[in-house]
Image (cartoon, rainbow, N blue to C red; front, top):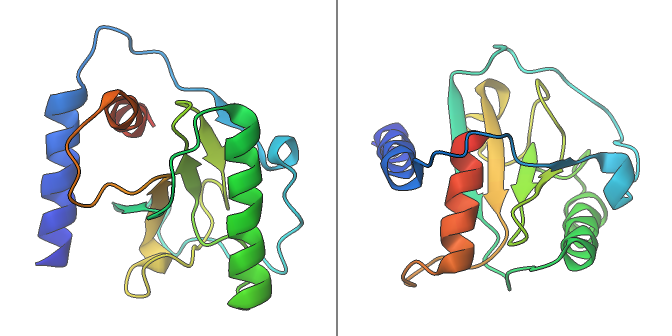
Length: 148
């Protein structure tokens, strides 16, 4: 049932986000946002992965590169130093500035969905999208997910 919800969600993104602009969104590397090195790195058991799991951070939306970098660093700190994980849990995070922030990156086992970590990419939309209608920022983020 959970997998069907993810597929339905991604199909909805596909329809809602179709645009004439098919350029790839800018990707901010770990080095650019100031990541600390991972404690360890484990490859995905299936690469390319058959699933993408989309999360939201349940936080304020960051709207410029500096605030998004600061937020991604805080997520990495929380995941590594408070939760004791090997690195930031997500493979990628998408800010309200329309940029993609590299988390663990491509082909790396995440810590975002216990049942699917070894066979999926985890993408977190920075912001709280529960119970809110679409606005300009969320439409921009959905477009970025589609292009990723």
